[in-house]
Image (cartoon, rainbow, N blue to C red; front, side, top):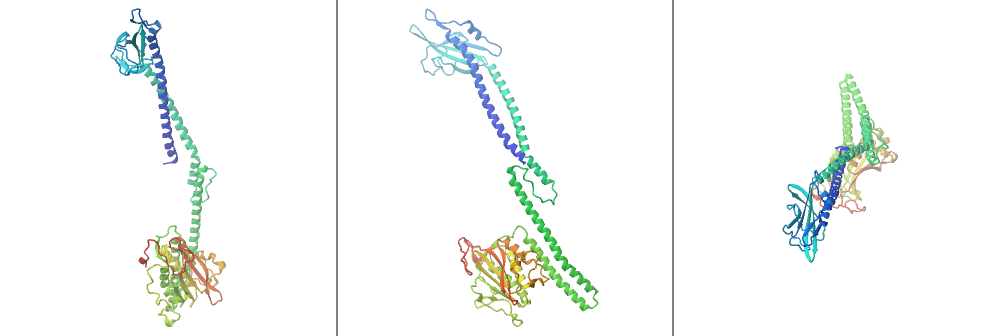
Length: 539
């Protein structure tokens, strides 16, 4: 339903109801005035007849009707008049409500209807409606006490007239009232329709402006030509347009960057394939095919990163659940253990339950001689054994997205750290946050460059610039997933490296799923159960 229809639907019924009520009140008022005027005219001959009653010398009642009273009582077209003068026998006491039997008619029509309620003897008129000879009439009754030589006589004067002319006057007035109200209603309806239409003209202009725009037009709407009540709506639309414009710009930039990143490895694969086709030596051709396979692997990794970044950039996150961030990080470490073995890196894991760095679980061998051994910590032996089922770092989030974020951070550390580097993954509780830190002693990133380290397709650091196989998407994907789960990623100094500097430490933090009141002084290893939660069911 449009605004115009809604406003008219809301306004017109109320106006019509008010006009009906006003017309009814006017009709009742006019009817009362008409009846009062006709009753006054009817009372005049009754008073004349009342004053024309006299006593004869012998004590009999005599009616001496004046000429002008006879003229008044004459019937006319549409206005028939009747009268009767009756002596009440016996006289009724004052205040009696009982209508006595019909008495002696002194003058007039004996069959004229008597009043349903006995009037007062003080001469107050009593008006009532009745029917005489199938003619609806209006009757006035006057009761008068007469005294002569100690005799008490009582006379009832009745004067009636047909109500045809009276009804005709009321119907005429009613028709005029209805015609006047109909004209008023039509005028009000036109004014309401015109007022609503005129008031909605700015909205119509705004609608036409939006419809006439090209799909690429992302300029804000003009709020100066709309009513003040609509300005918040226009501001909200402009805000949405600005957000949509930014999304389109980001998508365009993403497509441009993705096309650029995919064009380079495809060009390399094409060159290597052409080289392998031209090479007559089978061994050299095999080397070319091997190079193509390696390049395809890197391209596959880049494609997967692009898909992950597109998924992380979507507005809606995956369903949230209660999970153990400590256990998710441990699984990521176990997943990337073979990759760190290939580069002979020292990959270590510190559980959030561990309170000292001396209890580090070293998951990677230090030399080729002990490649199949795991050096356990003094506190727990084999880190691959199942941990406690109760969550150490309970958080609410999407396990798949948090796992992907930690995977990208750890993959970056393994990828950019040199052979034999030391990488430590540790979980801990800091205040109301659960943190997982991935620290290495690789080339690191300068402090001034860490702000733009999360940009897409950007590779930073002197040591990192020489590695061409990286996509530059790992940190961007990890931060996008972390923020979708109400957390974030920060970069800090890592462990000292052989160049005399420090490596890089990437910290992913998420809000702890703890009840209100857990203070900032919470230390690692402390666990507070959630109300109503059964941590023993977590794995």
